[in-house]
Each structure stands twice: as C-alpha cells, then as structure tokens.
Length: 164
Image 1: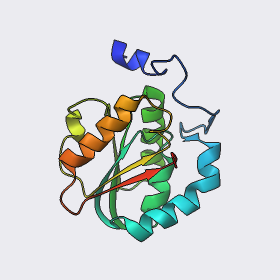
Image 2 (image 1 turned 60 degrees about the vertical axis):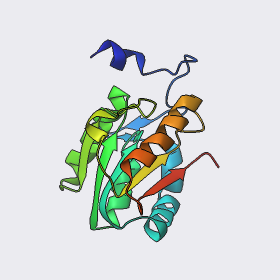
Image 3 (image 1 turned 45 degrees about the horizontal axis):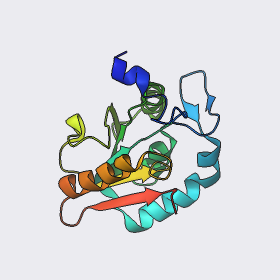
C-alpha cells in the first residue's frame, strides 16, 4: 500500500471517509445502510435522465452497490468504478466478481481533486457521483466539476446524488 493510499482513509479533518458503519459479505462485498434505503430510487432517476448505453465512470464508488444495481437495469451500459480508498476498491472488485459480467469494470484510483485523473482521464458518456461532494473538502467538488468539463462530450452528463 502506498503512503498516499494509507493516508486516504481519513479526510484532511481526520474524519473517516465513510460516515456510517458498513457491513461486509464473506466474498468481500461491502454494504451501506444508506444505499439499501435509496438504491431503487437512485437507479430509477439515473435511468430516466442518464445514458442507458455507453460508458459511465463513477467517482468515489464506495461499496460498489450503486454501480451493480444501476447496470442491472441497463444492459447497454458499461460502468467503471473508481475510488481513492483501498478498502472501497476491494469491495468494488468483489462486486465485479460477484456480478460476473464485463459491464462492471475497474476500479481505478481516481482522486477527483487532482488536475489529472490518471487512467480515468479519457472521454466518458456520463459521470456518476453519489454521497461525496457534501462530505469531501471543497477542492474535491471543484475537481469533480473540472473533470466533468474535461472528460464529458458536449452531450455528456454528470449525475450527482446526496448533497441536495
């Protein structure tokens, strides 16, 4: 684990990245109580306004549950997970293995506050970000919007959930 990865479990205020206890399945998938409460509504909203085909990058994918649930309702959609948090990326890998299809990919290590998103620095049909910008430092929200401006095509869309 890099020094950068070791430090990412807490924000600059030393609070943990996840603000709730998360359960874990024996296969490594993690589960969030808040996602259990809202995953159907989020998927319905996503499928009504976002691309149902193409490639979406999820920023700060957390447990990986949103991507797995949304992709299940959109057979033409390819979803790439990303996160700075190593335990979250481990959970995302477990969701990919559990779902067993090629439409879930990643996870990439993307720091949304960085001016370059490394492997994520390419064109996407959509970006998805849930439950991040209202708890992360403001520089992360600014970086997310800058990244959307750089990486989304003219008709590309950014879906934000959680802060409103």
